Length: 323
Image (tube, rainbow, N blue to C red; front, side, top):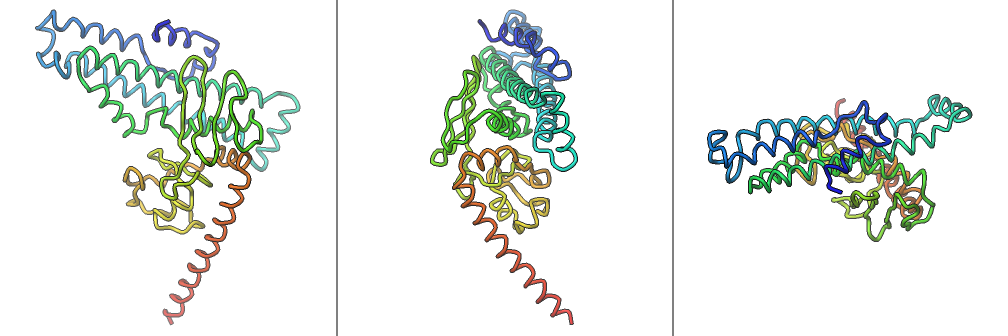
């Protein structure tokens, strides 16, 4: 089955109710735009001669602008739905009490797992659709513009397969369905994960679609991330490492970082204010790598105490100097 047919079948499948409020790639429409462009050689008046090599003004304006719009809408829909779902899972206080009360009358957990799985499938299917249509663009135009557009998607933080929310969603599924072993492999026909401290790669196996691998190595300490945070650029770090890179104390948090602070990996500025605490991933590490997690927790607490002492000592010296 060709991808176009598989994508259409997916959109018409059991996910109809779920997809009602979600955007998706207009794969057929974009493919039709490319089909009209294929006639450009036979119709020289329809576009400029440049279309035979690197670009086609006739379809570029429609194609790339529409694709960027769709990718942005899909990424926004995906992140908001995942954020809402995970917020329910890690709810605290009164909200947690209300949810437990609801469990007496309704199996919310099963519904949450199902929604999580459909969100993973939603992200991967749309990401595949974008990659397929860009590959087709380059093939028709003998260009690299489609490949370059992928870099633009990454720069705009709308590349779904690089989204930290996809990592959180994978961890969420494993927290619900997995065992408590440190190293774990396939535990169902629909979802599998390989992860261990020696090889910090989390792998999601989706049936008939794609194998997703996430490197959970912090780019600063080169160890598996602990108390992980994703900066708004999408890069993942330990909280202590990210705080160190932003020149703030651990107890102050990443939001205390200045706007000029840069991501240690991509050097983008202003990425700390909206950093996301990866609670599901942290929970996964806590349950699956207990000894490692306890060791890192003790080290972070010791460093926090050291930093706090240094901070208040310097504040006391400054206050004495005022008099």
